[in-house]
Length: 371
Image (cartoon, one colour):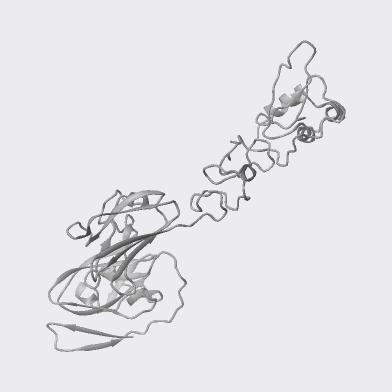
């Protein structure tokens, strides 16, 4: 890699070759501990020399509100080149067009200038406010992205980037909750210059990809919303669907979950991993998956003050004493989704319970057990 440094007061053109190890980068790497603007401007900024990836004087600072590395340096007039070196080393570095081990990024200053540098580790784009337009999309959705508030042109969580250098800047996200929003594109992290004259509206669903573009050739602004669709055709869009792959025709709740997906054995008590309560509103947490209603107990007849699920509902049935009510009532909600048959097995009860149903004492013991 050959880099050139020239300054207005210099009569010597210095040629410098930096040998950087060749490495392969994955699509994304671990967050860096430091980002250095390394180039032939460093000795002007207090470094012992140029092209020093470990010089703290040209470190950028990570802004947690923006999630962007940033730094402002007063640089004398001259022609310069630089790259972004991560972790005080050349092992991982990014140059022009956000390319790993890419070309040096040149810029020229006719006078001493405060230059602001930006590095996004999400996209690996390294740039400055001399080479690039700094465009953001302030709008009514910014707080949803983690900005301190809405309509903040200085929040770079909605920063439009142009790594390929074609003059069309783009911001894309699928993190905006469903709703109706408005925005504009503002330049230089302020409201002094913004486009278009009126706010741009858009409506999206949760999980949709919203893409905002700004074309510097004509200052035009555009927004597109790509909907994820409804893969299981249950009427709930993929971005809102907590239960994908619903069986065709099954009714679902607002979360896209059918009864079968949240209450697998159909006993009215929710699976332990249920993400909603389904259209029939299951309750609790099922301690006995695989409940069968009606159950096989009793094998002879339902005895007096004995209990079992003998019909198709979630209420335990009994034979009341003559002239009296049963004095008790139990449902699958009380037993955490367990039938008499399952209670007999869990408590190791005798054959009498299988023949005539669970006794009141057995039912009360089971209901009182901590689970």
